Length: 381
Image 1 (tube, one colour):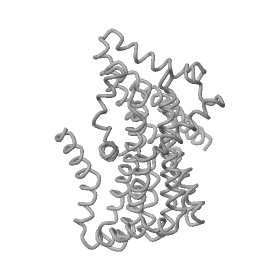
Image 2: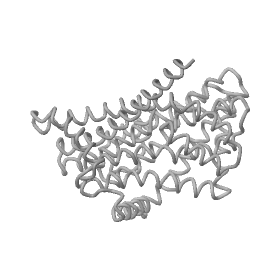
Image 3: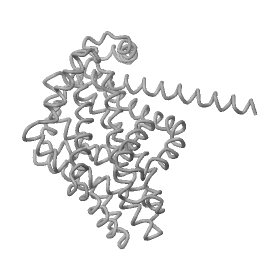
Image 4: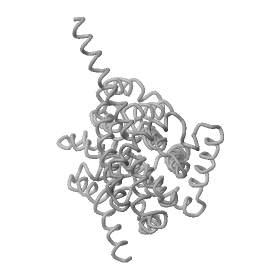
């Protein structure tokens, strides 16, 4: 018995080491991407590279498509932080993170198909999954025009970044011990390609950085799930249904713990399908997941040093503000609050009666329409 406890302790200890190593690799990878883009394109080249994304609607659908393909908004937003550090304008990046919010919901929508053979269960599960979609689309409909007209997320995130820097939370010079440790890893990776011409070194760093982000997010998710998912699921059972504020807070906390809004929302879809919890109880929990998922970009931004550190922090803060303000405004106004529920119930009724419509919804909403819009824009250009 004592030996089993010791082995269990050692196993959990190893998992925590894996978590720390994955976080370190993630931070190094984000810094590597930023350096790669600066080497590859230079300041002027980065601006021309993202000329396609200067159309905010293309940036939006790129965010949707990339997240749907990678199945992780955490991965996409971490890459966006690296791109901003490499010179991509904040105005281009904000629509991309809005799109990433939509793309990440594909996972729990696919999970709902586990109930496809049982009509009533599938209707409940599909509604629980797509209420997240409808909320994120509604958030874009409201806030993207406001952002284009007034740049309020850009301005507010810029002010908050300035305040954080002034109180010393962010080390503007990049000389703090934390950034020295990250800088060591980034410098080590850069030294591996230092013998190459800048153009080739930059390309290798970009590819390597993206690969390291994918690797770190995948293994970080697995390690955190093995440590927390059982606890998170028990916490979820205890918290959901105790009111909207508790639901939002618990959704945020669980997502921070498991580092994946897809995992968080996928945990709750089977419970909704089986009738354990109702759609109106699922709804605030998914909103909390929206807020909790921003922690990865905030974490990734800490890896950036040098002159671009402020804009990297700004896009991470912008992502957090967008999700937080969306929850406050949409859930705080009664007639707006009900729109995602009405939309999800309507789509779930259609999907449960005609399963092919549910399949077409996934194919076209997450892949077909975004890919067609990107292709049309590139062709017209």
